[in-house]
Length: 505
Ligand code: BG6
Image (tube, rainbow, N blue to C red; front, top):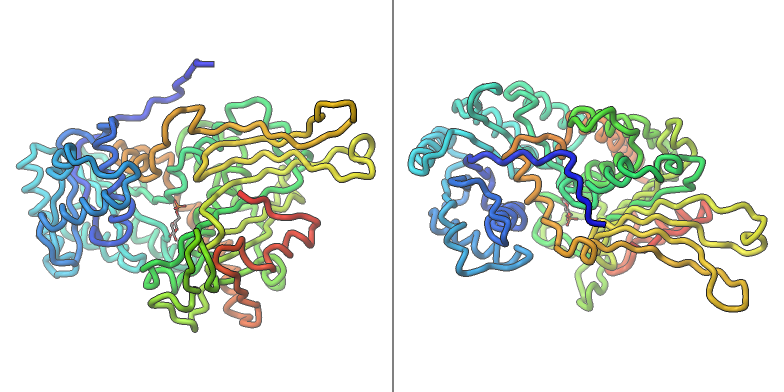
């Protein structure tokens, strides 16, 4: 089969200046600069001509120092490494300005932007990527606007602001951030990132469900017994205690990435491919989530943090030994939840979610587990494995369906076999990193892969009830698990109580 049908063509990205506020931080180093570099090289050549990247942060550094830093970031974090002969082509786009915290910082930013645009012959199209701590987002937006850096939304040139997750650190602050954004920007100028939406397989979930005729009739509580979503990381805290320790896994991963995945599995078909319609359908799925309130939190939510252990053959420290961790904050590095989407389609189908750091390996997947056949023919007296449709998000991207088949031979013996599609063999190339895709989408002005305000609100509402209950009832256990394992025993018990077990992604 070689027929490719292009449903909608990506809009071309526009030449612009991308300002990374917080350019000396972790996200810029690990993700943004390597993604921009990859867009430039590796045959993609996708960065629009003349486009410039201006790092803007507190750290004192010369533009040359920033280029050097970017070079190291690319060497360490770009999947294909650094290609010496192409480095200069990328490096000439980079510039740097310090003084983000200074009173006149944004005035100086404005002057530098004008200088860059004049020198490169660029139109004043500007993207401000707020790679700053959540509590600095509002201040940055106010100051951008105050310096006259936000152009009117329908003008000839664009100003766009990219806001990273987490948006706020609880429901109230998320709402406040949204209010500030909307006070200074039109919705069309705001791009709220959840980088899971930039992952190829996550986008494919939508296509699988709605471009194929076979799924819709079985995608409901009549055929599906339960759904599991696992997002496992083998990495630990690294140097991120300042951000992570006050936050924990529920806020860091569940409020955004896991609920995104859940909404894509659970959503109703949107009325069109229009970004607003898609966002609406996703937020509606979340609205149907049964709140995990009161005693349900103790029963349906497991939290824990890692002890020391062995990951990838290396002995690693426990969470409490990591630099910068304060035990009294009681941050969890693992959460498992059992949730229900209380609507017509999903009534009675549990969704089990789990995520954690320092687990056995980095692997994320969705498992859709179908109901068993009646206990009449093959299922009589012996338990047969159910059909499982697995969507592997990373690292081995693909999907598979487990079915039962007769083993060749005279006996009537059945065993599970796997129909497996691997992206690497089917599409013959590595998928681009999520940030590559998302950065291009901001440059082209397409909102489909970005969060709407209502998703942010609804996801926080769900998470906030759990946070409140943890706060109210400190006797709810904070368990522990050995680094390199699949999490605490309580998470296994959560499923065992329903006669189930986690699938290993
Ligand atoms: C980020 C979280 O949003 O996602 C990190 O803040 C986490 O704690 C990361 O490590 C995981 O992303 P990925 O793409 O590596 O699965």
